[in-house]
Image (cartoon, rainbow, N blue to C red; front, side, top):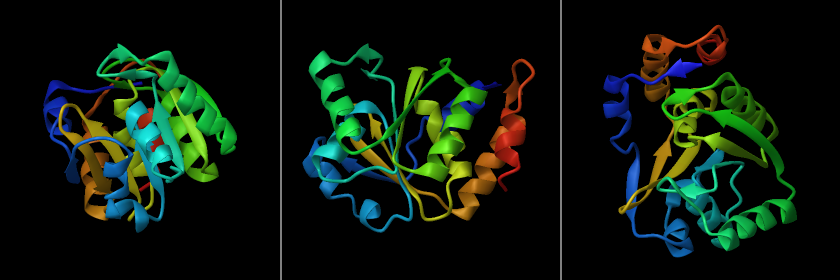
Length: 188
């Protein structure tokens, strides 16, 4: 497992990509990057739900059934699960403690990138999925995620960012004896 340092947390707290202000499926329909994407990933429950409602099916969705650290309403959770079942998503459940990147999460992300049409339900913090996904996804893939009280960020994976994120991974503190660094750095 890798632990995010305070320095990295500051860097990662600045939204990457283009910020679209507002919320809802109408906002997702405005995100041109999705239409041009080689691979489309949605991180976050409401972003995933709004994508489904807008008629876009993420190749990979990462949710934790919370929004801004509060439990989602049962109706919203049910709607997300119903969309996934109807659209034939494989559902994987993983644990990823807050401020960490677990081996379990990275393995599930790798599987989802290869298989597509996958949803990862995280017990813990799902936000961290964007960092390993930036390394695992091919260039020109798009990751969308919610920016609290602002909107949705659409981030297009670039070769330059893959190098930057890989350097960040190299600097992260390893917790326990696992393969997260190796799994992410061998992708380069």
